[in-house]
Length: 123
Ligand SMILES: [Cu+2]
Image (tube, rainbow, N blue to C red; front, side, top):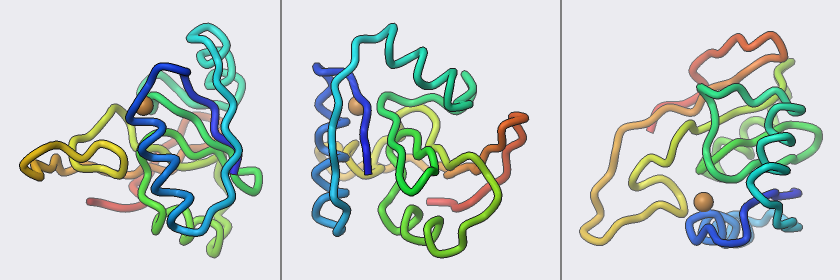
């Protein structure tokens, strides 16, 4: 897995650590905000899908704080999509744990080149 992130974002680093402990081999590249936005645009990550970091794994884009279980499922099912995204920064998602354990309900969405989204998982 290749992860692109801002050098200053702590929650991205926390997510990377989760991926490592879930068995992914992770390479991290720090990008400035402009380069990161360009990468998201190039990879088809629309404004409505964006989070802080963007990962690429086996050709799929994984945007934001997506749980490892969803990525394992994605790689197993191999759907014809560009990738999956957990838009924004939901509290309680991997890497976004908060003191006291508060948790937002959030969805992981699939997306296509044409910008079509469907719900992949609910958390
Ligand atoms: Cu982050």
